[in-house]
Amino acid sequence: MSASRFAERLAAAQLAVEEAGAAAVLVGVGPELEWLLGYAAVGHERLNLLVIGPSGPPAFIGPRLELAAAERAPGLASGHVRIRSWEEHEDPFGLVPALVAPRERLPGAAMPAPRLLVSDGLRAAFVLGLQRVLPGVSWGLASAALSPLRRVKDAEELDLLKAAGEAADRVIEAIVGGPLAGRSEAEVASEVRRRLVDEGHDTAEFAIVASGPNSASPHHEPGERLIRAGEPLLLDIGGRRRGYCSDITRTVWVAGPDAPGPDNGFVGVYELVREAQAAGRAAVRPGATFASIDRAARDVIVAGGFGDRFIHRLGHGIGLEVHEEPYVIAGNGELAVAGNTFSVEPGVYLEGRFGVRIEDAVVCTEAGAEALNDAPRQLLVLSGR
Ligand code: ZN
Ligand code: ZN
Image (cartoon, rainbow, N blue to C red; front, side):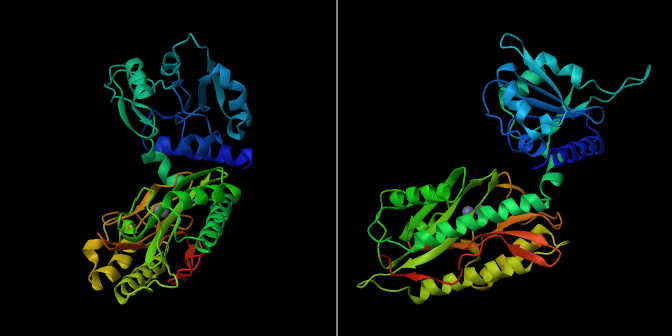
């Protein structure tokens, strides 16, 4: 991503800080810092902090021993940000107040407490350190200002998300190609992780492999249970590829020579979830509320009689984080806009029996949802071997 793109993001963030009426936004290591500077710094006990006020150049505070690495980040190499490194023996928090000086006090006028916004994942130890050197400040979360910017993906980000999605699709297709029956969930999960990396992911973040009744637990931790023929298998996998996340779920039926195929109960639930997932994708358009997208999918499952077994929101934003804003959930009246990327992942979970979830990441375009995943959604009955 070009240095000019980061300069644009910093300028947009500056405007958002001003519109939020804040004295500054303070961004620590994490996805906001990656988005603003292209700097994927390592999170640890040493303070790295980007300070963006409503005017003047942003400033970055970081430990001297990481200065060379920081300076290579495109957003810092561009020269748009002042860099202030600190030595091991220095108190880095002491550098912050001068960078967030509130607007000048009018003589005699009472000033409201300046407001500072901190990135949502900033360590408690850093927040307390900042509060120590900045008494009398009111505090808020940076997502209020930055999330509306980050959630609209640009063309380059969409390309990265598409590439991550396609890579995850190929992993799903390789895994369902078998062999599956007789292998443990944990063994298949490690194959998933290996394949995600082989497909260009920097990291495999999660590999839910849930066989038989375990599929009824949405966040099942793969264990030593052996996958059997004659039962469903739920795969929910993803990771980060060049910084951007993949996340796909498919539920398949593992068949075998002496094992039963899917019964009507399973097929009925599967088709209901598939219909709900299609309805959720069809409801995506600029101007739709996220609540209405959730509702479109949920209505299908409610009408099928399983409303109380769809126990989670329909989806979550996806980008530099696997779960980020916007959340596709009842009560979220925010409007979708072109460039939003989020998951559509209805599920039905029948404890002790089975669960079904189908998940794609999608991008909202002027023409509606475009799926970032394209692995088959129809019920696959696999040979298992
Ligand atoms: Zn998922
Ligand atoms: Zn998801």
